Amino acid sequence: MTRITAAQHRVQQASDLAAVLDAAYEAFEAMLSAIDPVQDPASGLFAAFVMAAASAANGRNAVALAPSLPGHPLLAVPAEQPPWSGEPPERVAEVVAGLSHLVAERLAEAADSAPDTGDQAACRHAAQSARDICGLLSTSGP
Image (cartoon, rainbow, N blue to C red; front, top):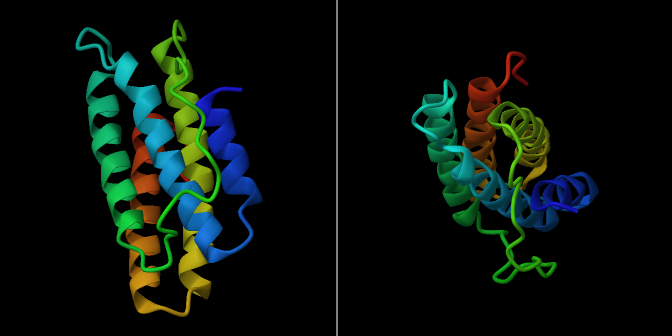
């Protein structure tokens, strides 16, 4: 199971605000780890990957500011796995876009139901970052 697949599963299974925030934080980290190896200046996707990486870092940082984010990961994150080694950049873009779409949906739901305004703002900001990633890496945004 790749880190992206594991992150997608965690985001899907998250059942409360803390779990959604924790899973979203890990998902943004997974996106960064998948994007980094395919940032080739010779690729037609180079600019999109660079901008998507910046959005993933912004999303991760927004989630990190959420008051309800657990102080430690709720689930142990596996040691660094070789993310998508050998996969074509187009495939990485497709998979990262899919994960970002899911993260955007879950964070938007969390923002709507979070009682704390700090959590609401963090979720909305991070959801926008995820939508930005999806828009950069796919032809069909969230």
